Length: 268
Image (cartoon, rainbow, N blue to C red; front, side, top):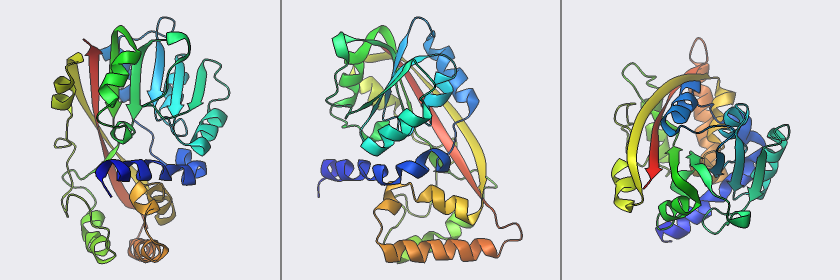
């Protein structure tokens, strides 16, 4: 299976866990939204926003609460339905069930900001920058970020200790047994610049820690494409070991550290 076909297969798996997505996935730091607004200069009354891959509305809600008009483009029908439920009280938010690559806004509408929260990597690389630029008004901005697992100094050793189990069940970590730190998370600045469509690229980093019980942690990873693609016996083996190891801890808690690289660029 080629990379494009595999990406297409995996990005459609999230619809199966639509009901769990909103509660299981982490919230992004409030400072990320404040930085996004400051870097782009978007205004509630002057700029419409377009979100790429809104899922259940995890990143939509904080901006909707600030009064922005947002059009969400979500590939999964079940996730789009969840987003409509979660955003029903915001009259300026519209959820469209479509794939971003081929979607066209009505009446040639343009946006002050096109953004994606842990969804940009699922968009076809041959299309995504060109498509985003076509939707932006002159001087509009593109922004995207991905919530990634990082291990800072002093981070929980649990994840390094359990990597051998992922190897054992045939689902090794893509980076081996090493995890990025908040400072070494990959930036896509060069990729944005290479598109030739954007200027004034800004990069900002954020990191935070969330503490999980075994049940909460398993609920989280059950929304990951890697886990959704596992066979039942692989999930059973993995989840059983997670429960066993955390039961041996006095507090039964695992500390997972999250990192984000916020990319913001102005349409050239």
